Image (cartoon, rainbow, N blue to C red; front, side, top):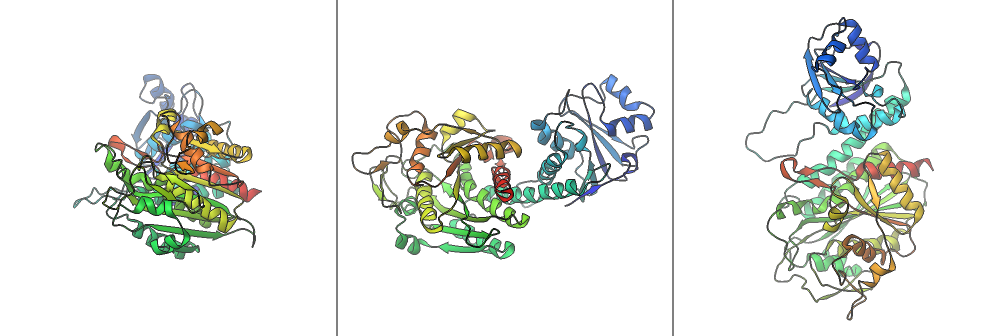
Length: 489
């Protein structure tokens, strides 16, 4: 599927489908042009309710009078275009237009108070992902026809808008890549498989990739990561991906991802219902792959290192048990009180290793870490924790700009104190039931030192359940927005 912009008169666009917005109480310029060319049919059908201005309502017409497009799809924008509604509105319109032809979108008119370049970039990403479908393994698959091309209608032409639209498509490709890994079944998507994928992506995008097997991890002293892996016959892997887009010798931005290719909970076994979704416990690592490859494709002028920890958490005979004590890469010891609190064990070794080896200017980790974050924030907003005010503000702004929102949750010494153990430096869970997301973040904070750091708990946002079950590709848009801001600096 290709992307481009198209100029000229909206009535002259000879495409398979033309998507036009209508406000609840007025018409956009494209709708006005169609109304005039059809002798007032748009106004007439809005009065009758055949075309509706309510948010997301779609009406489809073949051979619309005065238009050269094969079909015109009117989508409702509400009383006034709302930026937060753009993804849903545009996706609904595009889903009406799935066919192997050109589709033109006129969304620059839908948000009159927003910056056109921002609209174009956001629309590019949404359009790129609107037709994503999980890879399936059915013997007979549905013949799903994507549009041949998605074109953004730009009446006056603008090079910056075209650049932004194509950039959005590139981010969409990173989101698609992330979703693809997240949706893979765990018997295919193993730690070894992901390490091989990272090597191939390194060749494709010009990244330096290093893979550490279990012998190398033992030599490094990554006792916490290896402790998680003990119960599985699938050997753990740590993957380091480096992108050199900034000045030589400049400290990199570190992206750290939890890559549990399957999480049964280990000895502290999870309930059976919904356990199939624990293949998504590697979405943090998948999102970091999506982010660093997208940054390389966009040629961002920033150095990036991504550290990914891949393993399974299984209840095998050699599995770590509650009460065991593990020694981390940093030297700190951890008492295991619950083997299902394993993501923080993987991340603590990665954070310490990256801090020591790469001396990054800042670190961001992403992990499907705690169910408590879903209780706190639901499934639309990621949890944010940070030890640095500038990092926190940057992440919040990046989330808002990319429509991939996060919300800052508290870190406090009280959460750290709740992790004290009689037998080790730290316990891997707190001594109470409250504030599970904050205590998990407090555990991680013990391993980052003075490095500016942000932690994204994406347990509620990395995938959807139910009929729409599938990975979302978040927080790749947020991460790219954050990295682009560093590029500007």
